[in-house]
Amino acid sequence: MRLYLYLHYRIFRFYKDVMNENQVPLFYTNTSVTTLLWGNLFTVDCLLSYLDINTFITSVPQVIVSFLSIWILNYLFIVRKKIFLNFQFKKNKLGGYAIIFYFILTFVSFLIIATLNRAKLGL
Image (cartoon, rainbow, N blue to C red):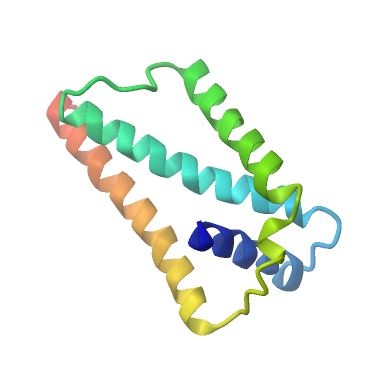
């Protein structure tokens, strides 16, 4: 949980410091983290599909509902209360590298599993 909150903190600080967004960094933070989390869940769903196990996302409305559900839960329990700002996290290079590694790992794992599914379907 602490790593998840640190991810929120680093993305929040990015929007606040680097992008100079003072109006809505919490909205951007919530959307960015939700997109990453949903991408990971969708990757797991694609892996289950590749292994011929029942999947839980089978249509476009389910994709939209699952994304919005994660966004709302994330907002209600973490972003609205600004819990990630209460931990006195500090920005450092190791944390920045860890976040960048997480972004890359999410993207690469999705590409690999999508390629495997595509090859299995013969497309």
